[in-house]
Image (cartoon, rainbow, N blue to C red; front, side, top):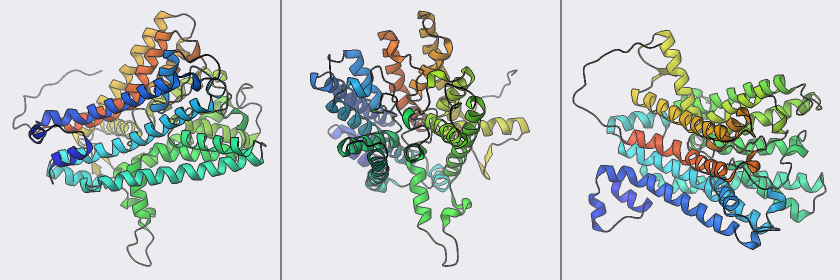
Length: 477
């Protein structure tokens, strides 16, 4: 099977000459397709949110409509106006549609780029990649799309039912509003958006596990990545023999990618929960007033949300400065690849950690679960991480130098939240100057598409040379 026929189905192709497209043009087209698609979605959303029917009072300004549309389509959750009071039900429905389109688009595009990547690589590299990631083949494009859609609908429906029942029975909301609220928060949670139609977000439900835990579960499932979910689903349906456990419970059958993603996710959730309890347990503005179980639930919720969803069950503006910085780190790492989460991704963070560990031990190779990581993978992880650092540092510096209204901690928090498409905020987004908000709009767009296109683009650019330059050494440290 050749690559061009597949690209013709995925990308609008040009007449006859498309079949003779150069490798460089084939590398550019996926990035162009993604960029144009998201820009078109944001443009339509901005136009709809600018209509009088979308706002309850005055019409939304261009920057307000653009910011909200970008935040929704890039499944971020940052807001410059109150979602509950500023937008009408029509405006909220537009936001919900943008979240769904953006989240579904990210998962499918990332998965399909993985298919494109597997075909672009050489035969020997493809065999290694297939063995280590259990990747699907190019013939499975339709199955990937159907699988993503089916899992999305089922997950969102289950969470919506649980939330609707809770809102209607415990909080006495009218059935219609309870259904709308349940659906809105389920879609927002699974797509890691963090938009809420409650002005106080999840703060009224800080100690309610029947609201917080379903939302946390949706955030984790959406952010862990479809390739991992697909692999675990396959292993869960496979038995080697009647008396043998399903492969799902045999970690040796898991790919390196899945073990890294699930393992590091679990570690970050535990570490985050412990940190929030220790750092905020006595803070009267956050966890202080809660009892023991309430503290653990709130800490777990706030540990999940930097995965990257923008829900908050405590007042972010009341967190300690150290907690802000720790949350910055969690947001920057983000969630799993080919999911709805943002950040540099868990696998990037894990690869860099193993590189450092191998260097400290003096090992010639970087080994993960008895598998050697290629030099290309290490370079790609380093490139994505350093580009992410630059994307955070430069806007933070620009905004900090141009205003004295906000502290460095606050500006850094907003910038990291925008780049990682998290949506958590210290409360200063609405008070920023319009050009500051435009900077955040650009960051949300780059943060949503940058790591995907950059990582895939670097892999697609890999080429073999028949010669190597003379080796030299540079003093480090």
